[in-house]
Length: 330
Image 1 (spheres, rainbow, N blue to C red):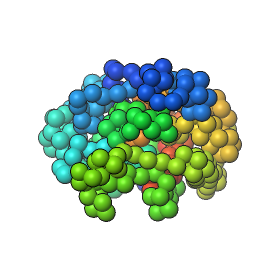
Image 2 (image 1 turned 45 degrees about the vertical axis):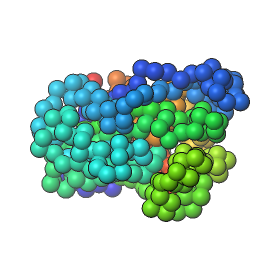
Image 3 (image 1 turned 45 degrees about the horizontal axis):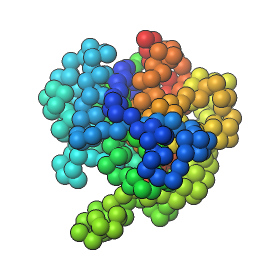
Image 4 (image 1 turned 135 degrees about the vertical axis):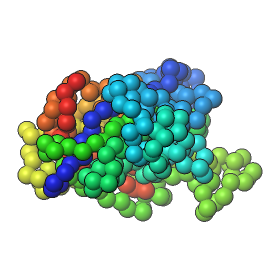
């Protein structure tokens, strides 16, 4: 349980590309159908970013937050970008984003925890603010998944999309903000959800490119099983530790991996369906961007003091849950 000064989300922003890749489009690319995709994933369409890098979406999401909140970007102390698809391995995408949005007093760096990236980033941002060292931390989740997807592989190409979302963390003296968290990881995940080449273990070569080893690969059944069991367990443990029951939770914000995973996780955690927020039908799985896109899309439904439970699961494996008290009314 958080004691003393807390760190609250005080503003949100988002960006998704205009180009839509529908299930009908995918029917022309791989052996699949609109009905098959909908029934197994809950996804109807996803967004695609053409001819621009991940930083473009991160910048747009940050600018959307700045516009909606009317803050001066020069007052931002730190920019964190959670992403699995940085513009380059070196230099940090966050440094570029900070410069482009006018956060001239800020420093920035990237976080990588795959689909858990924004959730883990919430902990990092809140820790900086609650320590008293920094006043405003901008956390962005952004991924151009289309840059690492093999559009001949129907196990991945039907699921992922591109997008970005942002949240601003500031001090709070009313007992609102990030209250507690329960995070875990297990290295067994590198055998089931991974990109084989491009790292120090298997550097890029003409052979790795021709073999398609720079695309995301996953064992869908194993990922499904681990995602449901671990997200629900983390959520349950966090609720028990804080003596929360289902009725205390106003909204459940799960990583948008697959609608069946979302439903099964909520059911196991004992959270009623009407409290579960989902936009996967429109965006697919945007990896680190799923949670902030939910916050942006549903911001007008949140009321000051609402208990919001987050859960995520990603490559590594990485997973966890976080409990946040919403700090403002729209």
